[in-house]
Image 1 (tube, one colour):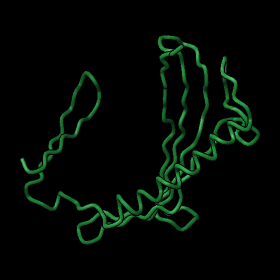
Image 2 (tube, rainbow, N blue to C red; image 1 turned 90 degrees about the vertical axis):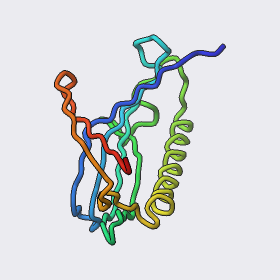
Image 3 (cartoon, helix red, strand yellow; image 1 turned 30 degrees about the vertical axis):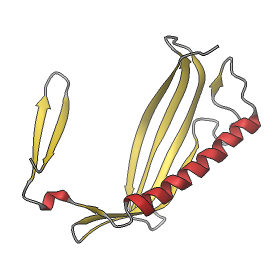
Length: 157
């Protein structure tokens, strides 16, 4: 039987440190809270917390944005992170300690691939900064009812 599920993801507490103890330029981290529910249900089938951490060197040179990622990790987070062998909550789904460990092993492999992708594909030659061109225009719009600031960027228009 197929069951439609909802994935709820929340990012909490983004933190940026410049010149951390590691010697890299920037340390960035945030907490990720995620839960899986049956569609339309309020109760979680699985709920867990993790923390994403990355460190990188950042530079702008010759009108290019250059970045070299040194470290990228996703680790279990929450009050019992050190001793946790299963998600914080799981109801109706059997998750063994070995499956949970496999999940974190796979997560580690994926973050290593992301790090390589950012270094080798995205930032290998740098990203050109378009604001040096006169045709780059920007506008700022304030929406009082939504209480958000929207920045619209128009390039070559």
